[in-house]
Image (tube, helix red, strand yellow):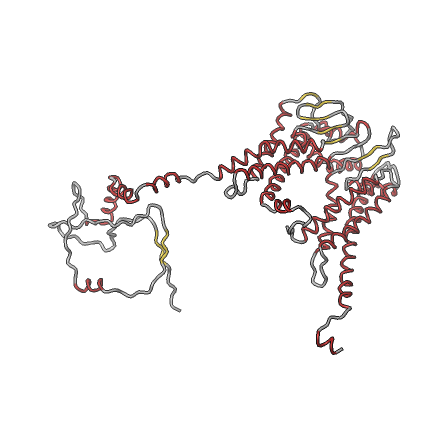
Length: 544
């Protein structure tokens, strides 16, 4: 006992106490992931139950509505559902995921990861890897139960599709939540990566490329949203007719309105793909592009589909959508030039090219997420082709971003105004230049006029040029002694602020000619012309 108290040896129970403190935090993270999945399921369940209660002709009981809610929750993760009740008897896949519905599980999972990583006073903070694993385990456990439960409903989920779509969304959302809770650190890359990759990624070029590519993608999406809004306004009558003809009860119309709102982000991506050129598919045999709407689409009645362009060849109005990728290319080139005075032209061009690649990758992912089947045969392909959309986005932005970036680089590195004149002035003799400026006739007349105004009656207005005649002026002995005696003064800090045209060359003041009557000298009249510039004296502090 004495050895323990004197040497400060730690007791063996201390590590076990630390482990006990960590277990409630890990359990709380697991519960947080499960709660995030449960909140998403509960929100969709409440929405489906409300629509089922308000429907005058429900097709199934409350059990079927809850099974449908579980299927919709899995669809929000990109999982493909299977619809068995079809007219042909062939199971029809439903894989077109409303992108606005994806925001629900992503936000909830990200919030759970952030809460698990939050620092509290009385609790020990888990490592980032432990928080990520715990939250993910809780979420995936609920996801597996939802997949099993949805299998007994009218639209069960494809097990293979659910096995990789749900974990993918959960992993990305949890990584974003943990990274944001830790302050978005950008530490060293893993050691298992090649050395060339680790050295290349840390360069500022890639941060600019990511920023430029994201800016170009945002411009494309904004242009797609503008095209969708303009098309809905242009085909307003058709859209209204389609909306009213689907159902006659307010609950059904409310459900159609909610579905249209959830599909608006998909329509935005489709509009961007249409502006880029590849367009989007409307079934297995129809494609809509700016050059024309070919084929015979098998379209269901839906308000957003009623705003499609007319069938047939393209018109100048549809060709004008090429403005959207042009503006996106200009934006990528502009955002790629942030360090024009620090890098070379080749570095700027390479940054713009990488930004175009990033823009193409972003549009590839969005096009793949916004497309999917709505059935079999003619309805098996809906939305843009992901590889064609990404290639078109990369080509448009690469073609325009590189020359724009080089031009902006050259414009920002242009020489300043007057630099050539200063170089020519420095090549001459400074004394000769100053002497020429002093003896210039125009400058001399201006100086004489300034001296006359300042001297008052000391220089009379007579014809001809005034010839200065030096006249000795008697000085009293007391004044001479005061001037000659040095005055001891404390040194004061003086700051001289330089100004343009500062010229402190001494000027000879004309004396009073002999024979002229003596005039009183104004006490406040200056005897030298004004000087362009400023001298600021430091203010002395008053004695305490």
